Length: 67
Image: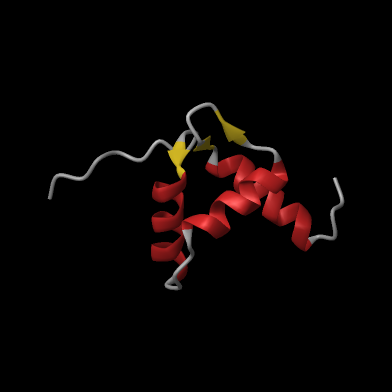
């Protein structure tokens, strides 16, 4: 079992979609992940996404956009 370590501060769209799909046991597409990350303004150079920023954005959205 030789798994690549996960760097939660720099995940590709593909890696994040796969991670979220596995964690939630529901398929999440790369297109959905990218659309959310772009709406949040958190897509970094090389199309990398920080999982912490991604999660914080979703939490704000669920809370009604409150900061």
